[in-house]
Image 1 (cartoon, chains in turn cyan, orange):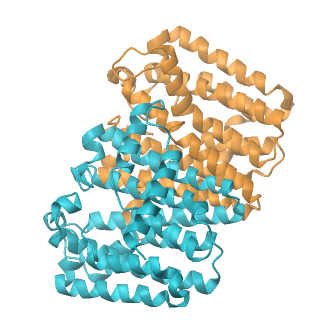
Image 2 (image 1 turned 180 degrees about the vertical axis):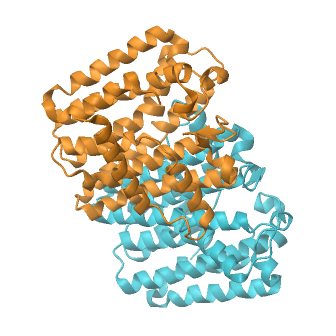
Image 3 (image 1 turned 45 degrees about the vertical axis):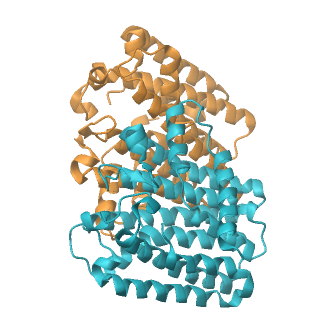
Length: 295
Length: 295
């Protein structure tokens, strides 16, 4: 399989869906819709959304039926980046190679654009009913997504991340930050796809294990890229974690050990896919890619 | 009926529900849960939540079954206040008589506490399943609430409000701001209660009309209170709209005409309740109260 082409096709499907779900930039009041679209379409690989589609496909479900979940998770991911970049948080000027939302639209609109994307994410999930899913299953997805995005997920990770700046953290704290700040959305991406496609308990467990290892490998390699990456390819300044004294894997374990921890998680993720045979090739390639990603 | 006692009973039910739905302040990471609780329990009359309960009761449904919606709307209301008060938005230091969230916990935590309350609002809606409602109806409520909270509701109103500061607005713009910023949540409160309690089309229409008039009367009297109110009773500085040159009813129509516009909306709201006879007394008293409210 040509993984890059597959990923690009999935990203194109997700982008087209996002374009449909978002109000047009001209809709009144235009500024908020421009800001939402600016950040949502500023690039991004759509990995979370692609995992939703890939898991549905793996379990013989037409991927377009789960597009509302894929789009919803990309909205949540983008909202979290907009708010993380704010002056009161990480105070970043560039993201995906472009000025951050608040640099272009001002802080007030950036805060509201984030709020609006988070809100629209749940509206989009309610749209799963058009795809004929059982309503009880949709309510379950709303619950899993809100848990993943809230203080027992994404937001919890972000809080501890901010609190840990400039202090030496223990590896438990580091694991908490990464499992929550990054891991929770990957986990719910994979699980939502699996639940909607009717995974049985064994399949759901295997895919949840895959997601956990994937999320950790993603974050470790993200931390490494902040040190070794190329600024143009990343679209944001490198070494910003170092400057902010962020809690990272290389900071706690050193770069070589961080690399082997990432490789270990990739192995774990691959192992958890064994029962799916060749149908899981996209999921395998996606986790392998983490070890040589450049952005 | 003793309206004040009824309202206090409803508020107590809602507060107890909020206390159950929110993670304990001690739950890791504690700071975010403290901040969420600080703002949510800083006071507030719980009018939105009380309307949900009252409409359910009106239609012979046990009010405790709709508590998840009442709590969810109060979470959304509080999140919007936390974000509105931020330095980048209205930059307010006091709310409900206490220092605003960002003054106590810092801007970063205040932004995240708002995000977390918005997220928890949707998780709480998914909890309607424990009350035995049809899942299709729950999905419909998730959709209505997200629309009311998003750019076609609350956030849209907030954006136009911010854009209108310092400029002379026409009455259409003023109506847009108020219908969206304030009206949308009152509307969805009443409609959610009605939908969950199985309102027929005529009842739903009458209650929707009530909510529209209620929301407008609420906002006009809110604008008037900013000029004539007592700082201690309001729990926030008066005349802040004037200082910020906000678009308000008194600013556009003068205070006397604003008063008669409010009275007109109250009359309209009462008229729309006719079909419900004496069972609608709480809803009647609640809208009458707007004309003599002090906070």
